[in-house]
Length: 250
Image (cartoon, rainbow, N blue to C red):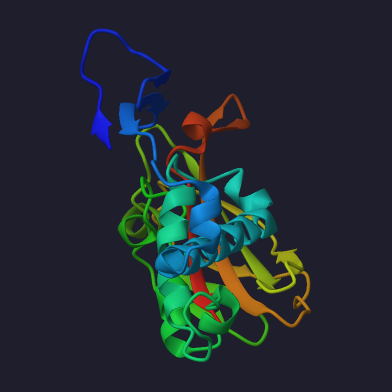
């Protein structure tokens, strides 16, 4: 793959070259000389088939997770979250120690502590990483999904983006089955506080219910910033600085 730097921004196929536009600019690649039928049947391409099958598995699993938490992703994500999540899901899949090559799954990878560790702490918006925004200790009750921030001092412990006046804190408790694609999602109460307050405040986020299911239980934390104008709160810059972090994988 190469980048097209000419003045002509071509899209389409020209001879053996394919020109296309991506988030990284105008790119060009050569057409494959191997037929799909050969790849599907030739023993020499067995590794290619295995890799392709496993890539399909991690791409599907990434989509399952994004679908499960869609209400949260609508408020906080970056333009490359899909590709970043695919990379992490690949590491999770590689943690599957029970399946043969070509048959490894994210579902089995998450049955291991190593697999869970790859996904835990994932930031869905790389422009707003939790560790660089919130500097307060967070207590998590894994059995109920309750998140508590005791004596949070907004002005000192939240690195609020310029122009924001308030932040809304929300959590979500989810159960996602990457095998069946079933999921359940339970949101907590939302707590809105002024980012410039110096007085400490206790924040308790309690999910409406403990999600049921045979999949992996996950706990998410969302921080959405807003600006108050004449008594009304408006999303700050369409959520560009909002935080969404997967804080626990059980």
